[in-house]
Image 1 (cartoon, rainbow, N blue to C red):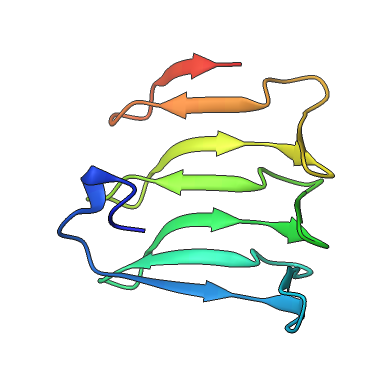
Image 2: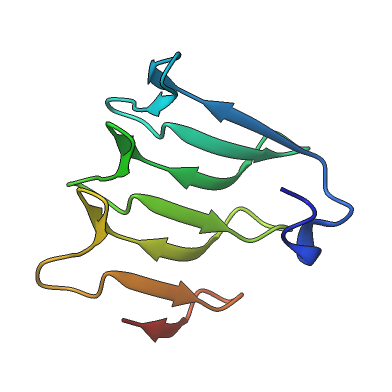
Length: 105
């Protein structure tokens, strides 16, 4: 994960993954994120909510990214059965460091 993102070059991360089927590696978890990346301090860096290996969540964003140096949301993405989708509001919101909305799609 560090090599793909230069912002994480010197960060220590821990990944926790829940599988419905460990042999097929089907990511799935009910009532919580199936994949969570934790910073060295134990706070989450990113959460991915999966249902049968597809990003999916009805009551909140299926992908949440937090700022590296504080526990505030940097980006939220809403998915329905693996597709970026949200009814009545933007599916993607990107926040500035001070919590202001920078972009919505």
